[in-house]
Image 1 (cartoon, helix red, strand yellow):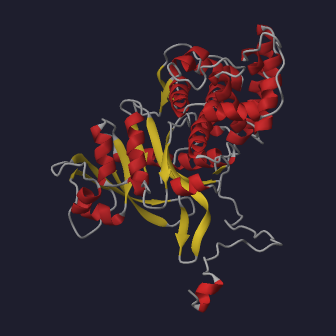
Image 2 (cartoon, rainbow, N blue to C red; image 1 turned 180 degrees about the vertical axis):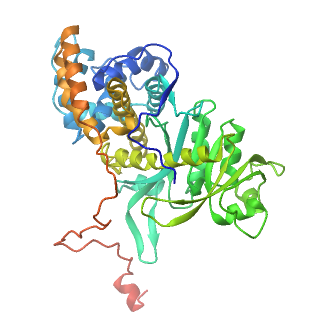
Image 3 (cartoon, rainbow, N blue to C red; image 1 turned 90 degrees about the vertical axis):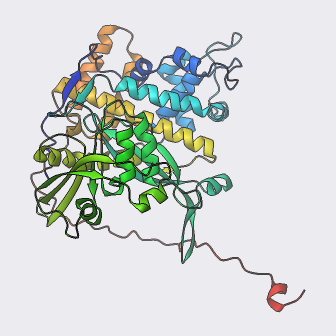
Length: 474
């Protein structure tokens, strides 16, 4: 499918701007991205953190991010980091007892609940903008490319979350876990993620991936290219991208490509045709905000491609980019990167399931979980630049292990020479984080060994009537 070689450093700097800072630890990178003054300005006029206390909003945000960076990520781990880590110097100590803090988690837990959601949203946006500089693009493309995709996240079973994010249901009954649908956009070169958007996956208020993706498009950097799979290859997505001046590249289903071609036959291989996409009756009914006379000018392309050792298949693309057909196919080959990014988010940052008990805490955990992911990605980008590698060549899991291992060393460094020594050693370790270069597919089939279970699975039973009702007694 024209997939680019991930072992070649293909990215180039679009706008060098200021000199990129040297390799730093996660906390130092957090300090560079978000200052305490910025958080105070965000909270200006809000009473959540107005009273004098040892923990400021800036400290609480870092501890919530640290929880996602740490393998365990408990409240207790965050409090121990507060007592011994570099953030200790930013605590507002009481005048009568300087330097003494309880190791209990209750105060930190209360501060997490009081943290306004607006602060988490603004911090997530500011961190993305700060960590993304300098901007890099792919060769042959003079603008950034963002990959769209969606996923689901399980939540804790509480009354509030069940109502906000209803569980799945089928003919066998209702599932136990509430489910949240999330859509995100990742930069193809750096892997950095824009602030995600989410909503219920099931129930009367369920939102589609397309609706969430339209909100993300509004927040993308100006002129960015939007790339999505067949689920996003609909008129409403192409129209939303054009309205915000974002070129798009979407894969189409065969039925939609056939209709866009204007005939009963699907586009032949090597088709490259200028088309004028207009909304169908179904598009107008599902998207009433789109005017009836709306249209999107673009190109319909068809390819017959073959994955490595895989079967041949037809690939239909719609794009508003003015690039050669082979270049369009090469760009679409980068779409797989977001699959590995979502895997890193759900496995390494542990966003596959959120244990928060309230909707407000779920929202804050999700936003700051993405901020923690971006911190790791930013450090990987710095290390890759110093090692003259493509950031995609580094393993996210090993990079996160390296960051966690060197976090206390950066905290203990008291001079510039000591920090430089830690940085050089960290950079040496990053050199061992490269992904293996496999020349062919793994021989093992994609199968899962079943795990033994000594206890039966719980089932949601149907409500039964009372004994009196069964007997017909009034």
